[in-house]
Image (cartoon, rainbow, N blue to C red):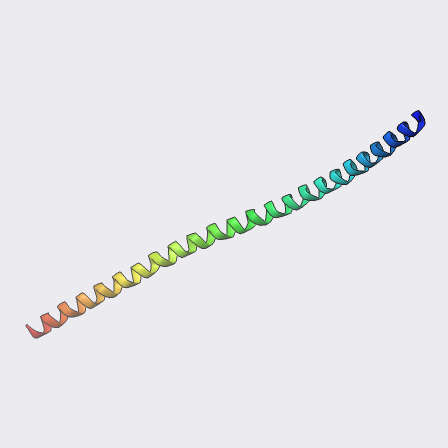
Length: 85
């Protein structure tokens, strides 16, 4: 009976050790995947930041164009008033 108990214990320990090895491999795979995803995130975050800056610049340029157009319109109106004076 003792031998059977030791054999059962040995089988259980073998199963646990195999499971530990499987979990170690899964952990390693997940760490690698996390590293890849972190790199992808960092690249996308940098691209997003650049796009945000580009958008801000574009909006400022648009405001400048609109401002310039208003100035041109006002100057044209003033010149027309001067010509009609």
